[in-house]
Length: 365
Image (tube, rainbow, N blue to C red; front, side, top):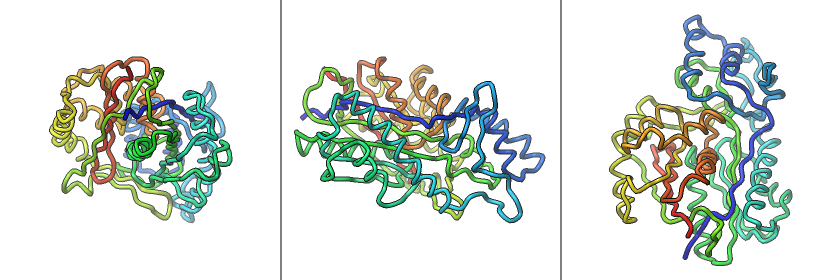
C-alpha cells in the first residue's frame, strides 16, 4: 500500500528579529561579565542564523529595531526571568493559533475538507496544558469531535519524524484514513538567563514555528513524496549528549560539544545499513532534509555521509531564515526541496538519547 504526503503547510509568528539584535537583547537581559559580553555576539554570529520568529516580539526588525517586553533585565529579586508557569501560560495562549494556521495550509494544499480528517497527530516539546492545542484544533478547524487524537510529546527536534511514523501507521491500517499531523513549538519561551556556553548557544539558535501534513493512502500524482520506510536508533552510552529538562524558569536544553563527533562516528554505518535494506546506497539519495540543529551538526552530517557541499543547502537556508524551531524545522527543510527533488529523499533528525530518527521518501509516479 502506498502512503503519501498529500499536503504540507507552514506557519510563523508575525514578527521576527535579526540575529545581531537578538545578541543585543541577550546582553540587555542578563548580567554578563566583560568576557561574556565580548563572546556572545561572536557566538550568535557563528550560529548560522540571520533571523528568527517569536510569539514574544511586538515588532519586527524592519528598518527599526525589533521590540519585546517579556524578558526584562535580570535583577537580584528575579535573576532568571519568568517562571515556568508564566511561560506555559503564553504557550497556552499562542500555540493553538500557530498550529491552526499551518494546518489550514496543509488542508488547502491537499484539497482535503476539514470534516473528512479521520485522525489527528500532534507534536510538541516546548509546552504542556490540557485540554491542549489538539482540542483547540478540532474546534478551530471544524474537525469532527470524534477524531482520535494522538500526541507525541517531549521527543525534541526529531519529534515530527516520530509523528510521521504514527500518521503512516494509521493510514496503512485504514486505506480510507486521512491523517492530520501538526507540529508546533514556541522555543523562544525557554530563553535562559544563566550564562554558560551551552545556554548561550541554545539561546542563539531556537525560534518558534509550526508545520502540518495531511497523510493518506492511495495514488496521488500531485504528491511529491510517498512514505517508504523509517529508521530509529539510540546511540549507546550517549544519554548525556543531549537533554531537555523542565526547570523552574523554562525548559533547559543541554547540547554537548560531543554531539558533532558522535554523529561523525555513528551516522554513516547506520544510514548505509538501513538504506541497503531498501536496495539503496547513500549516493542514491538525491535529497537530504536534515534537521538544522546548528552549523556544527550539519557539517558533521555532511562529513559522516560524504555529501557534496550543496547537498545540505536547504537545511542551511532554513537555519539562516528561521533558526532552529525544533520539531517543525525538518518540514520547513522538506518544503524547500519540494520542487527540486525527483529521486529518493531522506529526512533526518537527532534528539535526546542521543536518538537518530529518519524517514525515506520516494517520488510519486
